[in-house]
Image (cartoon, rainbow, N blue to C red; front, top):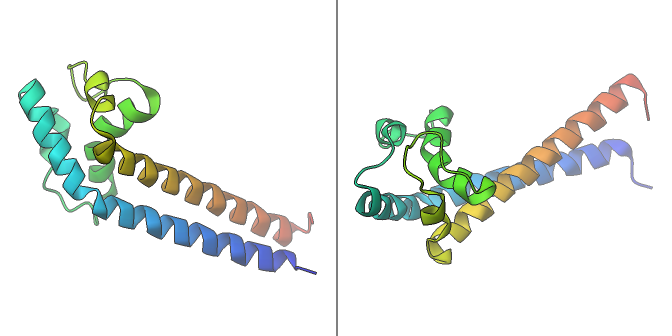
Length: 134
């Protein structure tokens, strides 16, 4: 029979693997990000100001910079709303980009969300074990 502690370890490993896959996907999406920025500039004249500020920041060290940079892509894709950072109505533009450009961003965010869910489940299981709830 599988021990609950083994389930916690397996859950943690799955979370780490999915989180790592999300980080790798974000690294692979840098080229697509640059291409989307180029198309955005051609359509609207310039990138949103906050995206311009953090465009060349190393996102490996500054998580906030990455979330700011990517929000103008993720918000239209996931919630069908324009980014808060721009005055342009860019949701149709972002959603209308070719699948080869936006598809990998869906993969990246879904990997991150599923990884977070596994981390939460693992944490709750550890808490349950610690307090003797199971």
